[in-house]
Amino acid sequence: MAQNTTTALESQKNKNLVVLGGSYGGVSTAHYLLKHVVPNLPDKASFSYQVIIVSAAAQAMCRPACPRALISDGMFPQVKLFIDIPKAFEQYPKGSFRFIHGTATELDHTNRTISVSSAAGNTEKVDFYALVIATGASTPSPLLGLNRDIEFLRTNWAAFRKALPTAKSIVIAGGGPAGIETAGELGEFLNGRAGWFSSKIANPKVPITVVTAGSNILPALRPAIAKTAEDYLAKVGVTVVKNARVKTVTPHGAGTDIVSTKTTLTLEDGKTLDADLYIPATGTTPNTGFIPEALLTADRRVDTNASTLRVDNAGPRVYAVGDAASYARPAVHLILNAIPVLGANIKRDLLLGAGKEESSIGEDRVYKEDTRETQMVPIGKSKGVGAAMGYQLPSFMVWLIKGRDYWLWTTGNLWSGKQWAKES
Image 1 (spheres, one colour):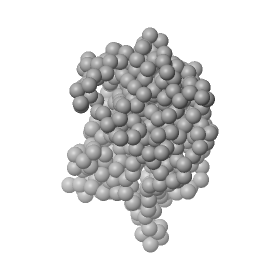
Image 2 (cartoon, rainbow, N blue to C red; image 1 turned 135 degrees about the vertical axis):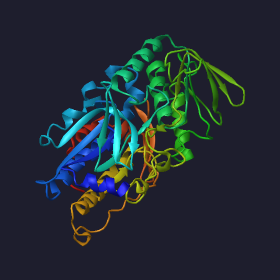
Image 3 (cartoon, rainbow, N blue to C red; image 1 turned 90 degrees about the horizontal axis):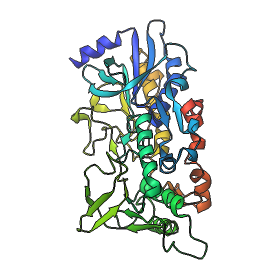
Image 4 (cartoon, rainbow, N blue to C red; image 1 turned 90 degrees about the vertical axis):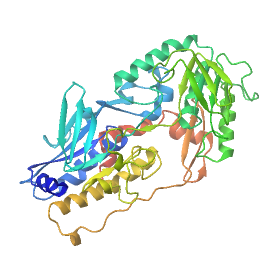
């Protein structure tokens, strides 16, 4: 049945190249397809190829900036923090691109359709000739990512900001970059920074506690770098509690459904912590609830070929990239490294589908994850720790590259497609 369905779709005049997700992976893939793949496909007089982005948000945003952006709109120029996705694709020929503002609710990889619940309340079934799953992952706190749309994010930011001036204590669960960056930003904003000759703020105005299950914060970095981060945190009124895990929160939904409520946290060892504000920053959950279980790994990411970025079990011309895919650990730089490989392999598959001989188009392009120690973590507006390609970076370099504006200086070219102007 699957073969018959595929044959029928291949005979259609309109061939949809569907990209699920409107963030780093999805927007980059769509630009790459429109610049370097679709223009080079043969027989376009017979077939019309259309790139379709399906996204729950009509805006893309610089998600890494959330730890600072959640404090105030004055932290970043909003026109750079959020960009309109359809507007970014107006540069391409009419009919070559379509934006669907909605959420994918079901993948039928046998009949090669995606069911989409639109923001307007309608349901649409979209046929695909090729499919790229780039739906990303959701954060436990609605403050730290575009989990739904810009209105949902702004509503939660507004509630948090309203409660912040009267908060007397804050607890953050999670010792990864999101938790540490959020603690550093809030610490400096509320408490200032200790002087050169003080190792910490003795009596911070708003004590902030980070609870981490690990023996060190920032487990992707070497312990010595993590220790430096902990020292920087102490200078802005942040205390780290290690080898501790939050077992329950009261009231239920505090930090996730309600971002501005007093919370009691019970740790696994029975100790309790009270907080006026609680932010869970304990990793992310892949946005893959619409995908059949047979296509998922144990951690619910899409089972993706780590070399080719194809979803081999889903049939021809199905791919995955970004935080929802299993080919690499979640990291923006790894997503961007994967885009040219993904684009090349999609182009190869589409050329084969158009009747080109395999001998004339070469071999698959192979992705190889860069596993070197690479992570940069700003701590407040002037400090930071990190490493790049295995080399430790001084605090000044972390500030210069990331800490000034949390990568906002890079996103203009990314969202506009200029970053993908050349086929690489």
